[in-house]
Image (cartoon, rainbow, N blue to C red; front, side):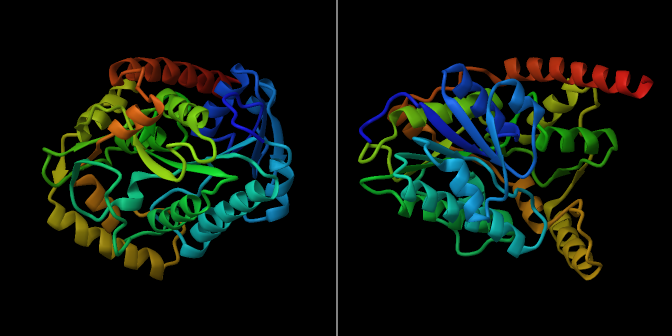
Length: 346
């Protein structure tokens, strides 16, 4: 298959998820035939004409069936979170990714766009304005970044004259349709369980959902074997680092919840996280602790990155600002709340 600018038939793993669905919508709008692979069936994918394959990424036959005949793969699916067994994360994030790579190689698929995470390079210290030359750390405090880093390295190593691969690292994706970050912030904020950790003068990156999805499509357009972006990793964001708690309070305000005002020093939050991790493991609790060592470090450090490479190499520009995004989030939350109230009345 020669160089392709237009995607004709794509597989999106995790197509029913937050980012995956946003990518599917754009692909369908562009006229592509879209296949998805997930463990569940989604009516919203039926509505926009996606062809769904039900299966687990760790099962190669399921990946093989979904990828057959595609010219591009967007590997978005992953097991996210800061708690759980390493083996579960490895199976989903590493074995699953290896199966996607194998299917791409088997079917001579040209483009593989992988959704990674800036957490793969997080070393527990503040990162301000750094670029993709940042090395992987020697140690990870939780399974998610550890397994995502292994998977990312496998993706980059798989780049070849036949298969072009790229890894994108979006940071804190949020917006309408979010089923992970925004609901957790709102739930904890409403319950009064959010506390600022450490010094409050650190900024972080985030990215609005439409910008994150657009970045994947822009990268795919420029990606083909031996292209300038093949075999590389890229940070993507709003290119507008903000104080972490300004972002959190903006999301809370969208749900008419009071801002977070109470705080706790890092030197207290970190040992609390360590003690909670020990007790949750001893008690074999499956739910995530309210604080962990990794979370304490994440909440108390700056992490924003230089995205000039993404701008230069595949013309990425965030088109929706944080303020515009918060307005759209507020509108979506109002609709969601209205639907919930109607269902309660029924």
